[in-house]
Each structure stands twice: as C-alpha cells, then as structure tokens.
Figure 1 (tube, rainbow, N blue to C red):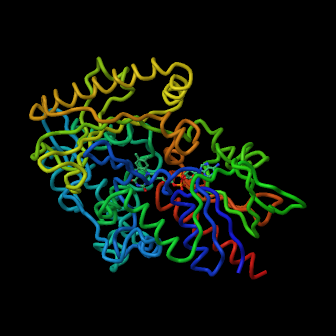
Figure 2 (spheres, rainbow, N blue to C red):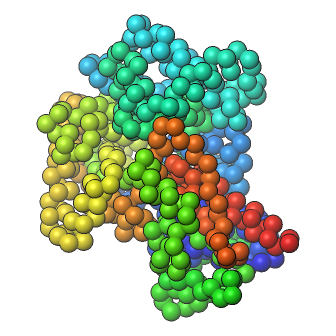
Figure 3 (cartoon, rainbow, N blue to C red):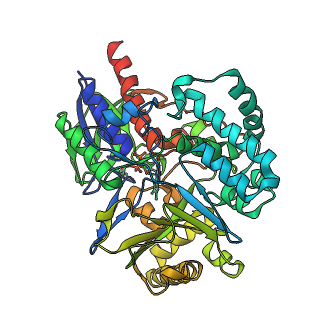
Length: 485
Ligand SMILES: Cc1cc2nc3c(=O)[nH]c(=O)nc-3n(C[C@H](O)[C@H](O)[C@H](O)COP(=O)(O)OP(=O)(O)OC[C@H]3O[C@@H](n4cnc5c(N)ncnc54)[C@H](O)[C@@H]3O)c2cc1C
C-alpha cells in the first residue's frame, strides 16, 4: 500500500482518489475550494438551481465500455437512473426545426423530410454516424452485433472524408439551410467534422444520457464514494508547490503553510495552475507543442441564466437559432444556444423553469472578460449586463411565447471559470478538436520524477468528463505498476 496524494478535487482528482482506494492505497485529495467536483458543478440562485455541466454523459449506456467507470465512481448505479430526453438539441433556421433525437432512423427520416434534395449527402452522413456507433461499442442499440461488412463499407468512406473536414465544410455539402445549421449550430464552423459525428453517434446510440439529479449531485456522489471507501478529502487546501528532491517528489506544501508527504503525487490541476506554479518546471514538450499549435484552440463560454414563469416551453433540450447579423459581432457568435431543464423539475419552483444560454468564446474574447474583471470591475459588470439584455431580447424575439416571462438570475463568463479552477482563458474542457487531428493521449509521467503523475483532461483533446475520469483512473494504474516494480 502506497500513500497517494492527489492535488485537485475535480473529476480527475476524485477518480484518482476512488481508484487509489479501490487498489488498496492510502488516498488523500486536496481541493482548494469549499466543495469538490471542479467543473462538474451547479449552484443555487434563490429558488432556482443552475446546472453548469453535463449536457451528455458519454458512457451512460450500460453496454458501453465506459459505463463501468461511472459505476465505479458512483456517478451512476445504486439506483441512480439516467434521463434520456427526446432531443439533445434542435436547430431552427428559416422556419424549419431539426432535432437530434436518440434514434438515427428518426434523424435520417427528419433530415430527408426537410430536404429531399440532400438525400445523398444525408445517407453518407448517417452511414458515418452508424459506423461510428458500432466502433468500440460507442452505442448500445446495435453494439452487441458488432460491425458487419455492409456497415463498414457504407460508413468508413464518408467517415474518412469527414475526418479531413471542418464542421463548416461539412455543412457546405448540404443545400438546405436548416441542415447546415444542424451541422454548425453547436460548435460553429471550425471544429473537426469527425468530432461532431462522434457526438451524434454517442447520442443516437443512447450513450449520452444525463445522470438523474444533474451535475452537482453527480459530483456529490463521487465525493461520497471516495469518502465511503476510506479516502481523505481536504477542502480549502490549496497546493502551493511540490517538493522535489533527488528525482523524487517528496511532499506538497500548501498555501496554509502545511505540508503533506507522499509516496506518489498526482497533479490533476489545470496545466496553467501546475507548470511554473505548483510545479517548478516547464510544461512537457508535447503538451507545450499542443498549446502552441494555432489549430488546437482552447475555449470557454459565457452564460446567462433566466428564471421563466411558464410550464410549457416551446422546445426541449437545447434550442439553437441564428443571431441576427447586427448582434453577431457583439455576442461573438452567429448562433445562440439556449437550454431548458424540464427534465429536472426540482431546479425551479412549480410552474416555473430555468433557461440557460451557453456562448462559446475563444482566445482574445476570453482574455477580454478576464482582463476587464481584473482591471475594471464596473466595465466588466456593464458588459455582462449588456450581453444579458441582448440575449434576453433575442430569446424573446425568437420565442414570442417567452416574451415578458424571463428574468435574469445569473451571468458568468470565462473570468468566472478562470477564478474557479485556475485554467488559462477560463477553459473548462481541453482543446477543440480540429479537422485532420487524432486525439491521441499524451504521457502522464513527468520526465525525471517517476513518482509524480499528471492526470488532466489537457492530455487528451477534447477533454470532458470521461477523459478527466480516465486520466485519474490511468494515473492509479501507472502507480500500481510502479508499486509492483
Ligand atoms: C458549461 C460546461 C458544460 C460541460 N458539458 C460537459 C458535457 O456535457 N459532457 C462532458 O463530458 N463534459 C462536459 N464539461 C466538461 C467537464 O466538466 C470537464 O471536462 C471536467 O469537469 C474536468 O475535470 P478535471 O478534474 O480534469 O478538471 P477541473 O474540473 O478543472 O478540476 C480541477 C480541480 O483542481 C482544483 N485546483 C486548482 N488549483 C488547485 C490548487 N492549487 N490546489 C488544490 N486544488 C486546486 C480546482 O478547484 C478544481 O476543483 C462541461 C463543462 C462546463 C463548464
């Protein structure tokens, strides 16, 4: 049994803690905040609950290889069900609405119904999704059948072609504007089309449902699982630096002046909080190369949450619609993503709902939020208020039944994420996957210090919950090997 010290109590950290205990090690997780979970979180505003994470949980399907990990971590299992909505997202353009439903057959039918002249491209697109659904059992529906020659033949060609395309280029292959919106609506024009197909395969394969209770409850269950296995969780415990002596990481010193010694140390903090800060060494070359690669873009988002005093909403899941040109520059987006939470009635008082927007932003736009909040709080506040009022206007304009029914309850930005988890640009996932990019995981070890491991979503694009959790799990696997040596 080894003493494993884990810095950061997000998903990667809690996962490392749980697997360390399952492997029989003494495990301590140190988290700088008053709660664990990191970006897997939510909070209350008055009578409303804001859920700020899971849109889909890859691995929710019991047939998928990731499922066991979510059971191990307490995210699923023990009577916790999943919520599979009728639609993950609906895109609207020119009076047409196309929804991503958890059935590829329905998706094919709906796409062809909207645009018969796109049938050829729709068939290729759906074949690529179907093919990916069968790879590595991503999907449940057909996963037991594996891949047959017909599916491989139909799907692999388009998939290889899409690997070289951005979402914008893929959208351009469709003639109908509603289909184009469906391809670019969530991530915009510059993402790899392959990543989009992966998400569609996950959802159509019923492998991207939501855990009941939402994000905060999932984080609480992970925390409880760790503690129930005998792990020690220190909250409000911020790591200041790792002590390294003679090629070994000996201990971590904390900002409260305390020091904890360990046999193995796992750093799950964001690389921006790790290198040159907790760890007095430069970023590993391969990771640095990814940060320096202009095609690999880190991203964040700003969000508004609105209380809504209606029971009947005009959409389910996420609604995506075009931002009028005169507002697109100010909002920094061409499409607006609006989410509703009717699947979790406890998030709002009876007869009410909560609606949240999520607007992705990149590079300078993220920096601007962070700079303004640091240097000119009044200007930051004014910018947030202005954005919120434009968003409210656009939502009410697009959905007339919501007119006069919304009131702003919170607004948060890349500056909020930057303060919360210490990530550069306020990123909450890793790099957005571009075209022609295979997200191969980078090494978790640190050159010259063999008892120190990294477990961060930045080691594999595009990050997200399964990657963070696997990072924690794999760090412990690596420690188990080192212990046996
Ligand atoms: C709006 C939103 C929507 C998302 N939707 C999805 C989704 O649908 N599906 C999906 O799979 N993923 C989604 N994600 C991404 C997912 O939340 C993250 O990928 C995941 O939570 C990252 O976990 P992590 O442990 O790697 O990092 P983090 O969550 O960043 O955790 C790192 C932890 O380290 C702590 N820390 C930092 N510095 C120190 C220090 N010096 N000492 C001690 N502790 C420290 C931080 O406080 C934090 O708790 C979403 C995220 C957001 C914000």
